[in-house]
Image (cartoon, rainbow, N blue to C red; front, side, top):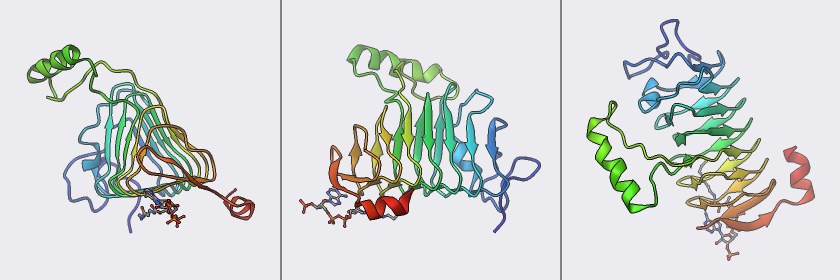
Length: 203
Ligand SMILES: CC(C)(COP(=O)(O)OP(=O)(O)OC[C@H]1O[C@@H](n2cnc3c(N)ncnc32)[C@H](O)[C@@H]1OP(=O)(O)O)[C@@H](O)C(=O)NCCC(=O)NCCS
């Protein structure tokens, strides 16, 4: 399997004819399946996305990063097709595993107030690119080292998922998940704490 990025910022073996944005850093040992993952990318920071040593970013992953967003994917982290909506910061720790169809959003993007929502919708036709953008605050998301997020989960703004934690499939995570615990459900609640032996293995 070919890794890293070509000199012209295309990806080795990519089916999509696009390139990786200049402010996205991909370690030579990391694998990013397709530049299509950056279709929604609008990041303006010099360090908008950093993909670490040995990390894997598979088909279906979307970096929906706003102008001030910063995404950090840790060493050996494996992200199997998540939608990362980031206007502030989304950090995925070393060795973390994010399953398919997960949404990590540090902002709702959509105002709760009906008038503000209508005003944002009305602005869309004049926008280039033509995308909805409400003026909504963002709160950073952190996925801990070695955490595992099951498929179809949704992690909401401001949430920290602790090191080694597990989130069960189809959970909606509205508040922090403590390190070395398993949380599940909507809203996600702790279903179990790791034993001392399990925690010793995970450090
Ligand atoms: C989180 C998970 C690993 C927990 O497994 P477990 O420790 O064996 O947990 P159990 O099956 O014993 O369930 C414990 C309790 O939590 C509940 N629970 C488990 N997973 C749940 C989920 N995803 N949503 C809601 N409740 C859940 C169970 O119903 C059970 O409740 P009860 O005590 O009232 O009967 C597993 O349920 C899961 O969701 N795996 C996801 C797998 C995945 O996403 N794979 C993708 C490939 S990367």
